[in-house]
Length: 213
Image (cartoon, rainbow, N blue to C red; front, top):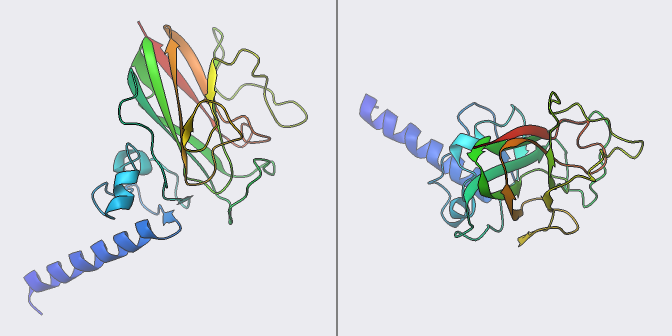
């Protein structure tokens, strides 16, 4: 087989495997390159802002569910895409997780100007998740909140949350493979983005988020 034909054959095989992965029940992220936003037809379109750059940031071994819905394309202000994930082995309707599980929350960009900010939250894990926006006090770092006995942190100062499947605002949680969103008016400051379902924060679902002047 000639070198040119070999290269074309390998490229076709890679494209076929990628399309099958996107169309199946999950996407295994095994390299730092993530996936492209152009493969997979309609499914790739559903990915919205959750493309190669964001998915390439998922830790090795995470299984990322394809998204079945997307946020409106005309949300106001700066758009921030938040990817939620976990290493569960099966879909779980409950948001309660065992302590010590592997979970993640990734937001891009992590810094925006003050004003309206639209958070588009994709649950690409197996369990139910949510996004809660909390202010950070001076000197406080993300991940330093102490969960209560039930595994949740104090969110009495919450500025808003996205916790509805394929809908805006609060609800019963963002189910696996769906998207929730919320628009907030945020002044300059430091914030913490968290999933506050039982044990999710302790399992690593938090990230600092900065709003500049």
